[in-house]
Image (cartoon, rainbow, N blue to C red; front, side, top):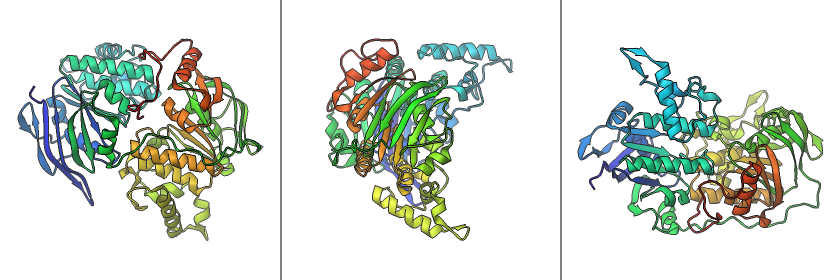
Amino acid sequence: MAPLLEMHGIVKTFPGVRALGGVDLDVRPGEVHCLLGQNGAGKSTLIKVLAGAHQPDEGTIAWRGEQVTLGDPQAAMSLGIATIYQELDLVAGLTVADNIFLGREVSRFGITRPAAGNRAAAELLTRLGHPEIRPTAEVGALSAAQQQMVSIARALSQDAKLIIMDEPSAVLDNEEVERLFGVIRDLTAHDVAVVYISHRLEEIRQVGDRITVLKDGRTVATGLPARETPTREVITLMTGRTIEYVFPQRRTAPHTEEAPLLEVEGLSLRGRFADVSFAVHPGQILGLAGLVGSGRSEILETIYGARKATAGTVRLAGRRLRPGNVGAAVAAGIGLAPEERKSQALLLDDAVYRNITVSSLGRFARGGFLSGSAEKAAAREQTEALDVRPPDVMRIVRTFSGGNQQKVVLARWLLRDCRVLLLDEPTRGVDVGARSEIYALVRDLADRGVAVVVVSSEIPEVLGLADRVLVVAEGAVVHADAAEALDEHRVLDLIMEGTGHHGAVPGTSQPARQSEGDVA
């Protein structure tokens, strides 16, 4: 079959950085072509070239056998190329329908027809399996998963022939991922091609046809069969080295004979969760497992003071914390690495050093002024310890890969010597190599006596990192046990029982288990 898209020798250079050094990619009609590579490998730059957002310095692009120039996003869209970015580009203040048809409003004789737009939006959302999303709802009021579906609906509305999906499952639960895969299969059955980017290698086996691997801005392999290529081979191509997907062993036992460091008792937040109680000892890692929207993230945010509890108490080392007060929580020794690090944790247009020191500025004050040299020295010490790449504390943090941005967030709390670290989806959007480094860092912190609470949608991650696990469903803790006493299938059963269902998560037909292919 003749390719729909062919890219040859694509080169893109930014000041001081060669982002793409010769990339080849071909995509056939009706296939799911998976684009893999570590953070910083060039995937984002490549898809922006394909979307018309960046112009290549060298190389050619052919569409249906004819060479084309994608001078801007409109040129790409006119050919039938639609892009769904990991950081969704929706307008929060507009309605769902307005976002779906933004710039292409449904009209007749030059007059916009909102009712017709709403009907068309409802049809698209029903096709995606989300008829509950109202076309007239304001996008900013939707959950992250619902916003993802709106973005996909917008791509479908463009009658695209090639849809680029950048980490589309990052904010979806298991059932929503299965719905997404159903949509993708429906698209490919109608000869629509999909370029699928994900760090979850088990998804590649489920939905992919062929694989292209990028490393250091170059194509190192292309056309690999997605279901037959061994995981170790893919990881070696991505990283240049063999990485076993294992969690680090604990060097010391948690200090459970000591008084708890963090105590949560009867904590409630109206409409989100109720009567949550647990304790975390020095050196202990507590995992919260549950579906997206179960209340896991809100529990962490309430402990941190970003939300004000409607009932219950939080104590650190026996001292009760003032509810709804982030400053008091930070001063007491609590740090939070939130799920949405770009919008909630990072000053994207500031330098790395300022992102690391921002929660510790008092220690760098000299006579009423900040000592920039002291800030940079302290930040440099942290970036060296965490192997942040590139090791440049003056560089703007927006230009770093997801894994290195996460390390910058963690460095902030390491600098503060926090005693309790709350981690919400710590490896979301992080490649397999950086994941292993973050796991080792979290375990090292616990070995030093820090109490850690981890939220993750990936049950193997919770079970692999945590000493103890709380299963959360519909805003309630439905089970608590030692991690070694649980397996993935048991946790899924508990989650579904807690949401009024029984058995495995919809879309799975057998007990889930971690295998060689389960890299995420």
